Image (cartoon, rainbow, N blue to C red; front, side):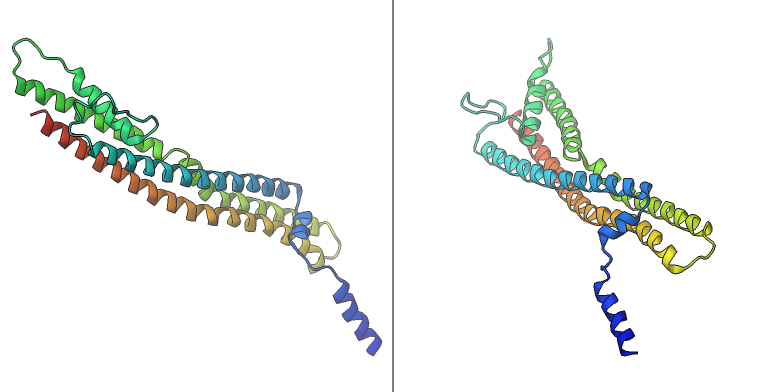
Length: 238
C-alpha cells in the first residue's frame, strides 16, 4: 500500500507541468495560425503605440519652440530676412499657410484699405481652418489601425476558441468512450487563442486611450495657436 502511494506521488512529480507551449501544441492548425496572426498584430500594435508616442512628444516640443520663437518677433506680417520657418513643424505649417493666404489677396481698383485688410484677414483665417484640419488628420494617423486591433483581437481569439472546441468535441464523438482526459487537451488548446486575443487587446486599449487623449490635447493646442495667430494678424493689419 505504501509502495503504491509512493509510486503515485512519484508519477505526479515526474509529470510535466502544462504550459503555454503544451497548449499551443494541443491546438489545431487553425488555432495555431490564429495565434501567429495575433502575435503579428501584437507586434504591430506595440510598434504603433511606441512610434506614435515618440512622434507626438517630438511634435509638441517643436511646436512650443516655434511658438516661443514667434513671440519674440515684433510683427508676423513683415518678418525679417533672418527669420527661418522650420520644416515639418505643425505650428510653422499653420503660420506659413496663413501668411501666404494673407498676401495672396491683391488690391482691386478703387478698393479701400479697410476692405482690402478685411479680405486678407478672412483669407488668412480660412487658410488656418484648413491647415488645422489637415494637421489634425496627421496627428490621428495610424490610430485607425490601433483601434482595429483593439476591437478585432478578442473576436479573432474567440474564433479560434470556438473552432478548437468544435474540433475537440468532433474528435471525441468518433471515439467509443468519451472521457475528460481525451477532451481536455483539445479544449485547453482552443482556449489559448482567447488568452492570446486578450493579451493583444488589453495593452492596445490602454495605449489607444492614452494616445487618443494626447491627440485631443494637441489638437486643442493647435486650435488655440491658430486662434491667437489670427488675432495677431488682424491686429497688425489695421
